[in-house]
Image (tube, rainbow, N blue to C red):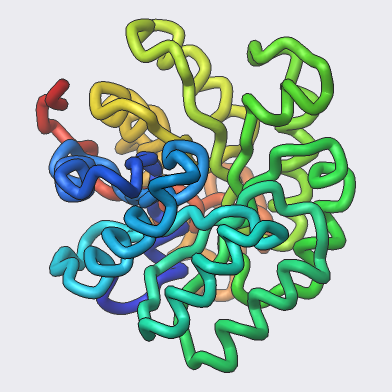
Length: 290
């Protein structure tokens, strides 16, 4: 759990590791392998018969977790299902506040607003990350984000999106969809998190896709295996030259603006500099375990 500003920690996170809610032995190992954020999953990785047990395990972990340098998030089941309502009820009733709730198959501003209201009534500090997995979710994402106050990031669900669209799951087939999500997120200044790379044995492919995601405007990527963390953290970490430039920009901007190396330092340039500074964590040098 993060001690302090959750939003700042989420904006700085580069790698979001999915961990099945039924395997508590993996919760801490995800952080030890360098992931900036851990997603304790109650949805796809948990069988229907194990939902209640996973819910209890996750609630206990969130209640007792001692780490203060890793974003702790919980992916509940869809709020339109009985399992999702049970997840929300259990978390609120137990007075448990993870840093983030990941909300799968989010398609409606109204549904997200109901969850925001429940958290407000419970005096919870938990932030929200809608998971966009359908064509309707992509289409309505600007409306979903327009009036929400707890949404700090948007996460792409590429596998379900491809299935919903009848598209192949490769980068090229979903690049326009990813661009739409990055655009909608950028319009309201929330973080865009790319989907996992599912070929866990293909490090070259992982590096290529992650670099594409960074160039497109994503700030982070989801992770499904510890050996993916280092490459993702590296790809989204700013270079020394970028950090030097960002610090110089912010000095000029704080002094009222002006020019830096022939470029006018305006709000847009300062915003780009802040993005580099938010992601200025040192790249983890831990060797991932298998």
